[in-house]
Length: 152
Image 1 (tube, rainbow, N blue to C red):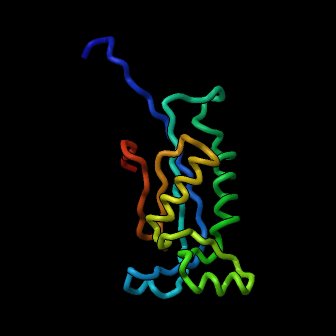
Image 2 (image 1 turned 180 degrees about the horizontal axis):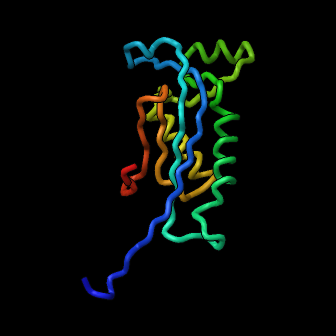
C-alpha cells in the first residue's frame, strides 16, 4: 500500500423511533393484510457524512431525532395509513379520525420506508442514507438509494 492512498472516513448516526399505526393493503394484494390491522412499527433512520460539522458531529442527534419524531407523531402515529383508493380511509376522514393518505401506493413497510426516506431527505437532512421499518417488532425492511447499501 503506498503512502499516497487517500482513505475516506464515514461517520453515521442511527435513530430509532417507535410508533403505532393501522393500515391494510388493497388489490392487487390478496391475503391476510387486506384486513384492517394495527402494527407496532419502529422507524430506523441512518444519517452519515464523510466529515463532521463544526461541533464534531454528523448532525445534532437530539435535534434531528426530534424533527423526525415530530413528523412521525403528527402524520403516522396512531393514524390509519391508507392507499388513496381505500374507502375505509374516506370513512375515517368523514368521522374526523386521524388518517394519512400515502397516495397511489399500498402502505407496506417497504413503501413507508421509502416515503419516510424522501420526507427526511427533503425536509430534515440530506445526510440520510437509509431508512428501515421494523413491523410488529419482528420483520424489517430498509430503503436506501443506489450505492448506499451498508450492512447494519
